Length: 401
Image (cartoon, rainbow, N blue to C red; front, side, top):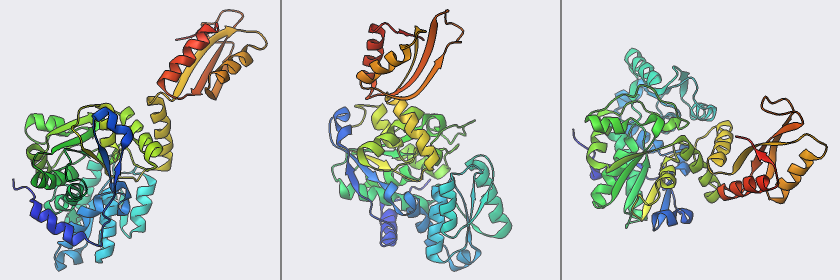
């Protein structure tokens, strides 16, 4: 299967001048120690529509003939491709219809409508929305715009790779959040052509990682199920074209946990003041979960920043728990006046902040004259958690399992 060339990607870059933003590269000093050298973040979360998807969508739509443009376009997406297609269609004067899963994040749904697309909700997962979009195209004649498996899409996404090499010519490793493979395939095509010795690594959520079994089988393999907060990279089966790019050009595909994704989102918020969705933060999660695995200088692509505020709140709490910033304790103490006050005073002296507390005299394992105190504490990290636990035990409080 013919791969997208760097010349085609360069033509896409010329086309996209004035349409997309040349996104900045941010230095991530806090991640350097674990990898022994410079680490930078390519901030596609700051791109128009909040993700890299506008690059491929505009490239694809611009290539349509006048007759195809008159028929309109149809796409399916969990949100970012939808926004990219909607904006590109608006800029080019093309009618766009988009199918999204029924539980698509509300901000992505609202933004897609605001860009002028007609939106339909269909199915529980992206594959069901894709099937309905294809059927809609067959019924109406609208041109189906695949989210990743098309040369124009891959060429447009590959312009991220051109910018990476221009901004950091000495790059040794590029980490790319990977769902269907359009972004990592395009970036790999560009980077490998310009810097053949660089290493390309795709990063997938381990609960939605279709590429490892596909690469092992030598062909695209469909996952039986997926369950991840990273909806933007939850793709059950690679496309034939993106599979060819990944199998030939990408050096490795690693997976990251849900806890790692939460920690990565929190890291971007705390250390860089950047809002990044879980799918967009997968490359940072790989840096956190695989210390020393990537040769510097490293570039991690932050592929998107479109996250539902309610989900972001949950992710922050999840990430703080994964990072050891929350401590949950159940203490058994004597049931007498002042016991609870004594516990809280000691916790305060240890520098922990009480978020929630529950006081019970009727827990099944309590003896007469005992009370259980359940605490949720905010701490300064894992070492502080251990210190608080040990000091409460030294103070005579029984920490219950």
